[in-house]
Image (cartoon, rainbow, N blue to C red):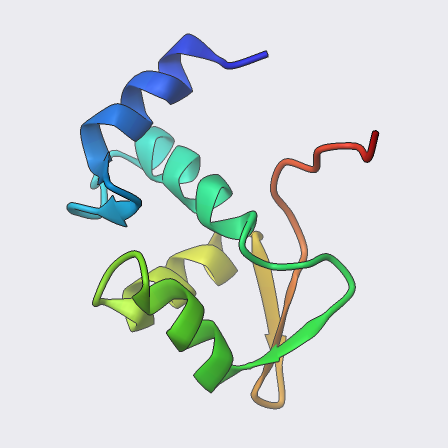
Length: 93
């Protein structure tokens, strides 16, 4: 089930799979960060370079997106490694 408020945020900030800008309003930013968290497989560790490559496909400011994702609890980081620690999880069918 799609949340209408989240869908509205996605339509406002994402065009053709690219983030047009990073929302300044925290609640809207969380919707975008949750969407980006879906790029990362739970239980897998990623190098900073890999995180940058994945995020860079959606927006050029990968440093800001990484920082926001860590600060909001979508990613954790230690010793140059990142892993998904939050976000919506869709159960397997």
